[in-house]
Image 1 (spheres, rainbow, N blue to C red):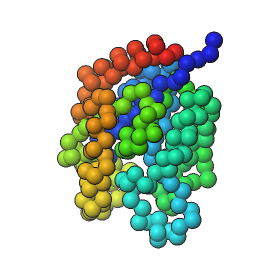
Image 2: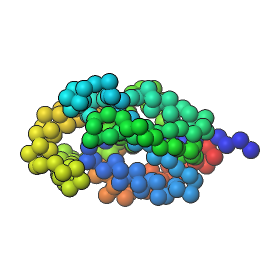
Image 3: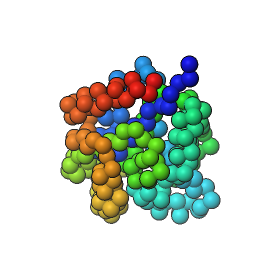
Length: 210
């Protein structure tokens, strides 16, 4: 018997909002159905044609930083139950790595990233659209802790980047995509009630699709 179309879930929200926590919570519930997570930040554009000094100027919070056409192409392939090779981005050299990650088609596809709801074509591929809405003070604290502990950044550099790039890009591009969401989840992975509601809804859709 031919399987039906996979279910596509989009999870958007600002940097440090808790998108990954929500993604992991949903993944844990549905991993027996076979789930794949496609992270938008693997799809930053290849910049190998630019000098390193030019790459350093990349605004990673702007829609034009992403190779959205490739992401759409890959989602369409997965919807046809064909495998893809997910690109890998190397932040040390600010361009795409030669490495690729083979991804097999699954019953549930989770698209996670700050701007996955920004592009209409990408939105149209989604069955469920979520926006993780977290207060700015929590997001900056989480970003500070991550960038200092995991990326070796200084407090001053993180704050400068947040004020000059992250905050204005959030207000201009990310926050407005909230209006496309089917469900807004306040406080991310800490919101167990919203996640439980989401799980129930996905179960119903899975029963229709699979």
